Image (cartoon, rainbow, N blue to C red; front, top):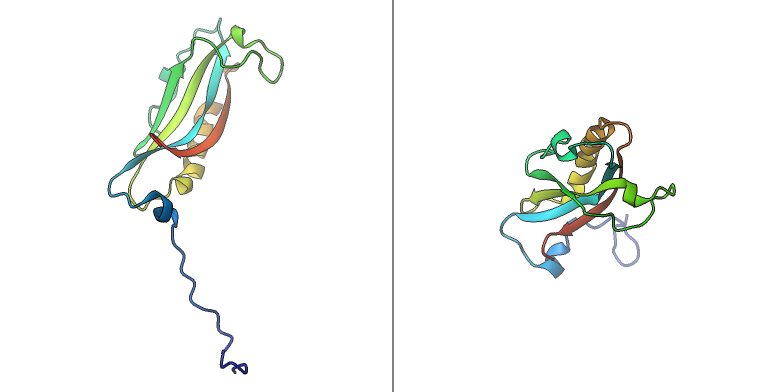
Length: 138
């Protein structure tokens, strides 16, 4: 059945694409993306090697980077604890992303793996992580 303009009412074909190419340009090779970034900490009196406890990789081309900070970039934690009483590390999850691969689609699986690892750390270890999804170097 058609309307007076000859339109049958059928929906046009829907084409879904990743429009990032329009503003970022085409990329031929793999690129590095931060998936998650934040902090992990423990009381200074606990002599823990968090970098040794946690895996260095969370899957193929997904790397967990842990860097000790000389001091926290904040004075207090949300619960009022002085940051000077804690050893604080910056934690970054970095993925090498192949052309056509969407880093946002990797995030849920990687976050779940990391959560399992963090949940297995000793009592007193805390963390705060945020989704990042920025290309390294941009």
